[in-house]
Image (cartoon, rainbow, N blue to C red; front, top):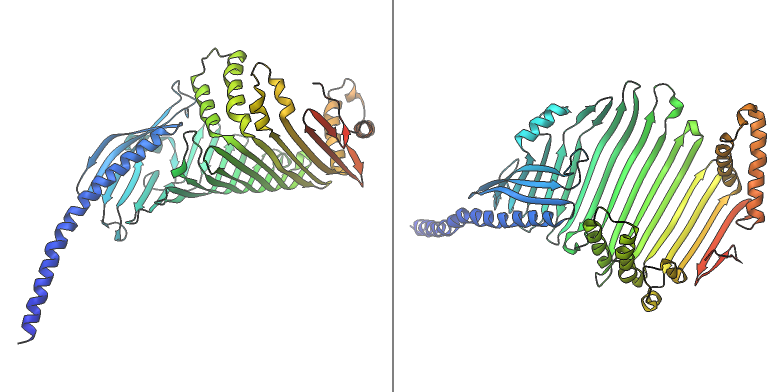
Length: 478
């Protein structure tokens, strides 16, 4: 007798819960559909504000559990074969609303989005490209969780494209990314290989293990289209081959480009640093064998107002704009919005190793911004800026490296001289040795460089209109 009242009580509780929960389960997808539409519209507005793009929804049908639409994205200036120079890409967008998202597995979230090309564009690409697998050529999949974190995956099927005697072969492209509630976008991609083939000689350039990633804080994107972030592009191996002569090709291994951008605390200035490195670069026919190549460049204290206004000047410049136009507009902008903030350009590293030895160099160019701001300069006299510049350069190279570079330079000069073809190979080699020795002796005698302990070095310092070359005063032409 005691079980029945408990059963009745439990039944009533379940009935009440179902009465409360069922309407929510029915109503919530509609609410999420409305919120998702707002999110999609804001996304299109955001893309449309970027200088290189335009975006709009030509169609958006919101349903209770699902929505679909057509998003038009225009890449400005991307088509060199068209007078408009624009490429328009309409994408089909299909959305499922949460809180319960169905698919390969059941998940909770705000929405599940799939993007693909429209049928006519898909059919066109299927005709133009030789696709290796079935299914849509391009597809993007995105899911936003209940906490607002969005995961993104996209891919291109492997394809081949041929235009005349040139063939492009691309293996499967895959990308993964995410956008957090802090609007930080992270994205990484990889392509096993990309091959360029030229017929009928069967010359080819092959890129292997291509990959990269990017991270951008979209919440801090400025009107100058600058945002804090970082990027990386890597190629495991790049090589070329020549069917007639194997020595004419090249091999480059472990190619890497990295970069990052930052804003100052007031978000009025930005800086950027880029790094290029290459483990090995070999061209047998040219006797080039370089290893451990590094190039690091940095820009600091660049005014965002300068970048934005410079972009506006470029966009609004008349077709007949001449030197006086650019001097008046860009020159004035440089004096008012760039130089007063003490911009700085640094060659932080330039170095490489070769069989002959090692080379390295560093350089820095900066501006005394406060002094320029007080000097009341005009764009009609650009030379007046020179006393406010600060420049420093240091370069060191092993003696054999400099001799080899000088030998290459003098060989090119000799090949342009009359009568050089009448000399034997041995005679040309002797003459070349003599000219290289004379050239290097001359630059050392004139103190353009210093030779010590089998190493050449150069130091150049410039400040307040005065220059020192290797510690000695250097006359200037201004």
